[in-house]
Amino acid sequence: MKNSTLFKSLILSFSLFFAFNSFLLAQEPVAVLYELTGGYISTDDFKKQTGLDIRAEDAEMGCEIESYNMVWVEKGKDPVEVIMRSADFNEKALNLIQKAKPRTVYYFDSVKTKCSTSDEPQKINSLVFRIQ
Image (cartoon, rainbow, N blue to C red; front, side, top):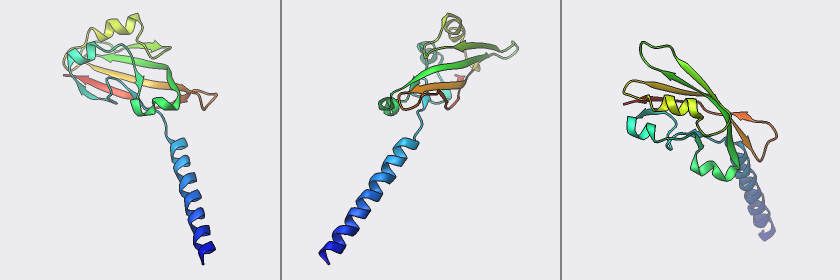
């Protein structure tokens, strides 16, 4: 009877171990700006930002932002797209960030990360911010 209980406990332990590891491996990193994945943000908070980041709890996955597109949209004006090749905003993007005012919208799309666990970049979440 003891061997049967021990065997069942071992099977349960291994099952939980593999299920938990599968869950961890299935997680994808999440891109954030000011620890947000989108929504409303104040003009002052938005203007302080210098680039996208990986959510803090995903940092241990060894992922970095490799590239993304930012699109600035202001009512009555043509949208402007900027392509970034790192997490940090380039000069053109920083200039558009400084134009932030209420009702301006910023889209961050085609966000790609490079993780230590993969040879290929992977596309992750997009972000949309409306300035208040």
